[in-house]
Image (cartoon, rainbow over all chains, first blue to last red; front, side, top):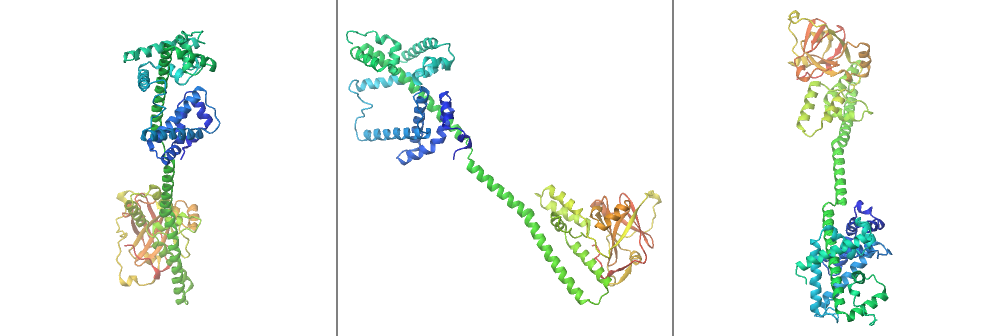
Length: 190
Length: 361
């Protein structure tokens, strides 16, 4: 049963919250759709943990799309989440089936141009970036997240972070990247 | 395109970033990718930038996931299960309602039905008696009826009065024989049921103030509050023993008597009632003579009972010390803790003692 508080949050309100970078909107969506997703995943050979993962993934995808301005509301948010979960879970099941049957996953191994070793190295480097992000200061971390993850423009970042203008953001971003690379080198990156 | 030899393209950090973020036009993108196909250094630069972007995104997702999980768990921990809460509340309300019904309403109904049964039985009994004594004198019947009513009132306990008082639109209920006994019973009941609310006792007190019945043939006298006399000036004549009676078989026999005869017998039982409980006709009398103490006289087997209707009833513990003193053949003085009340009894007023009240034990 939805709590009365949850019912107060319409789709428009939730989207507004997300656009403003407020995570409350996602929490409300999480509450509203948890049972539906659990039910779907459970009916399709999944566990409650799988359902939690799928729902979180779907919500993150929604967050990224809304924040980057790539989300177009053509249906209810619950419909979007259900469709996304369904898609994510189908792909995961397919991948699991391929792995269990010994097939090579084309998504993960060898794309014809890069070797398996190169791909593994790439993954390690991604992990390294992720770890080094923890070491950055809050301002740099936020700036890089807004730029690379949420794909905001320089002007939007300036507005959100209170910088004077886009040039200031550009300059600050350069410094942050240098700092991140420095941490990466310190942790063994070449 | 080859001639353009864009060997510096990858050194344009802004261009590389836009390429990785997929923010360059398709035409420029194709041109850039063609250049990268021939430029290993450019591929490496783009690869590093891609990894950095992926790492930042992965970090952002991870952090958002963690936040989401923490918030969701927190919300779940503080989530109020409204269905359960409302169900529990409904059950509680039902239980409370049931308790109130059982405690008050059901008792009322039972008492009323018991009383109506008693009244019916009394009427039947009375009817039978009346039939069997059809030749009796009219005033004798009246006195008997009065006594019967009085007895019935005495039988009914405080609880009955309370329940009857709950519906005040109905007739006021029966008299209470002894206020002291009532107080004792009420207090015993109060002590026995620890959970009984104080309001209930207050209600009982309120109900005890209800007016008694007017009964035809009753003897009412008015006591006069006497001025206080110094202790040493008080008369040392023997006083009547209140509440201590010995009945002989002969005395218990029905006989006609007068108030004078009653007073000559040395057993006067005292009782008290709040003045608010006076029957309506005596209320008017009380209003016209405010200082007089309205008193009901009832014959007993071996004397009489005086029921004093007091503005301020004497506390139960003190009432046992109250004494009645015969000061002349037709006068009695009742000594209350705070005042003395004098009575003059009409000598020739006759009472039929065939239905005397039982002497107070």
